[in-house]
Length: 221
Image (cartoon, rainbow, N blue to C red; front, side, top):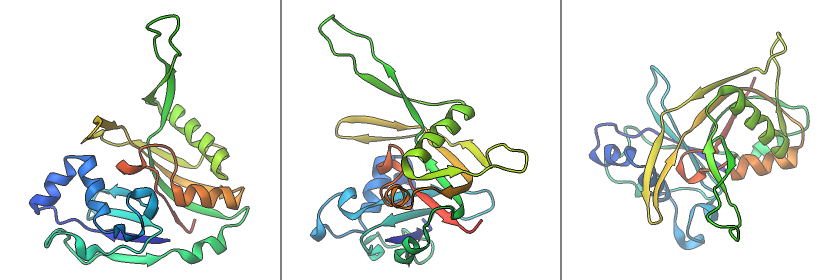
């Protein structure tokens, strides 16, 4: 596993065009990978996230199973040289009870029934964003049950986590417009099932993984 830090040049016309379209950012990220090992995001295990913290240079983090080559990006696309680190050793420190600080940008959604056009129709659920922080936190707790972790509690007994809605993003793809309403979770977690956790860590949490969601990053608590 590899984690790359990209600092886009915010005066580059290519960057400005890309940031207006999630699908185009996805395409740009995938330029760092050679299709000789198989085309597509899944073949290279790619997850990415746009981080724009106040007072800091905006960056794109890219996690991948394949070692990327960022020299394929257009000249002048990055404000500084890309940095890539090897994450292969992290699997060895993931054991039950281990605690980490974390950041996750995710598409927290729920399914609602669609209207039936006729009695013979099979109803299909429609995915909609979860708008309230309590519901978003419940969504994350359910993801934790699935992916082998739980959220730590603070001294007051409440979940030790910050939940922030991020600006809505959109993009154009062959099947039509895609819209993502991302949520950023930051706090402390504890691992309960190392194998399930590694699966979620490497494949992503939740939906919209091609559009900047699902990448879980860890730090010492």
